[in-house]
Length: 239
Image (cartoon, rainbow, N blue to C red; front, side, top):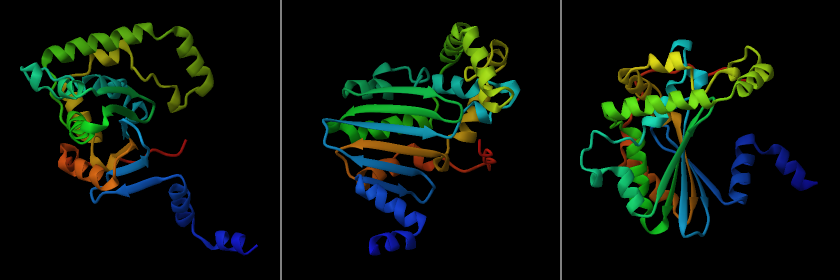
């Protein structure tokens, strides 16, 4: 049919754009490479997920677990002595909450905020991720928590990963090992953050009753927008 002929003549990029439009999804790439995906949805709350291309698949064996350890330290604000001035406290005071997790290739940070305060909470959420403010006590406390998580990771889980993936990179331990985590220093954490937490390695997914223009303005007004591309990261080969 004429419709099928028209579909075949359209480029892959054009078809993808039409598909996203059909489901009310908007996308935008800022000039610094930061990506935004927005799904407009009437709701009293907004959901934001920041995906960072940082995970165990990028790690050298001697620093295994550093991505997960870093994720634990994001949001720890021991350097800010006044608890009322901490961003996580301010987000909670607005009725919002934050969660995070590390996968094999990505680290994901999640914000659930009241629509009334979404703009300022989104900026604080992004600032919290862009700038590390953990104290020495925070570092050692989280190092102990990560070590405890490693101990809880059952031997069966390790066996299953080994049988599923063999010597493939996907068999790596997300948490690292007790020995590798013990060798990680605060300087290592800060260096890993500088290397991977950069605008062109991030994608923000937003679901809620908000406009793309305001989301982009919130990103530009946050510290995420000024993270520099200081080192070229070699892309991972397709798995």
